[in-house]
Image (cartoon, rainbow over the protein chains, first blue to last red):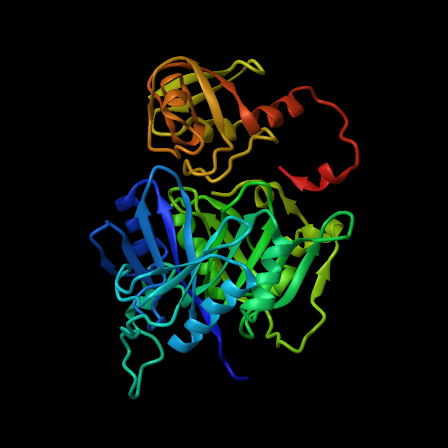
Length: 310
Length: 117
């Protein structure tokens, strides 16, 4: 399949309450690779197999939560076109100059009707995964440090106006709807899973009264064994675990939800299936089956899933 | 060192060591309905009001605990460590949960029953 337009989740910037405690957590427990610090005090990380400079950035603040979530697009021409398309759709966009984030080109920022700041960018310095590009080893020492996820996979965000958000992603940014959970009356979508690739989701949204909330950022593991190993490492380090290890009905992904030291939820995720944009009929879950959608084996709609966000 | 913590809303008491948060002690009561939340001071569901006693508070989200709140003892139980015996009242989301389960009553089958609290 041709990959054009929006390629993938690029970076998330997340607020933490204590920077150094969080650095230790993300570097040594989750096992991300620290790639830099900037003059604003932000700390940059990437997953071991990501080639671009960074995918997860933290800064110290007096509240937890998400500052912004960004997608990488194919090239600068695509960035210009999508900026124009967003404006033509009626959204206000803002340019953040190249270099404002380390190793990152110019960004186009806009606010969704859910209250989340989204960004698009075309350029981020490739630093490689440490294995080289000629006759590379399949993995290196960094995969074995901490939980060691492969990449930043997706995020689930909570906020109002999910129907409008869906229109922006599908009509302007080239995403398609993969799965959804209906509201109790069956008339609308309570939650949506959107893809710009053939991943089962690149971003998801759930209807929630407060704007701009982070439910979780998700990190990809290679195998179910690696998800179980992640659970072991969480317990060894007394990480607060929310749900799992289990399997979602929605996306069929295998999962653990847990919280970073500031209460930002993250996920260690693997699996799912490979949807294509010509799957025009999204998989649909009725609200009374939301429990199975969340936790298929236990068939439980865990209350924390609906109420605990940052 | 252990201190006695009294939940004024229900009259329950539990022991809480100085190195564990008021929330983890409360969770050990094994009571359904204690919303443990994120356990990191970020989500705000475990808000309480300490009405008597000394405690040490670690950093918590200003979105949920203002400077005034904190000065008046309204804090997140997951970020507070006892330094003496404590009396507390639960507020916000936690109050609803505790109030709902304070008096044992038959649970009616409803959507609520499927929710794992």
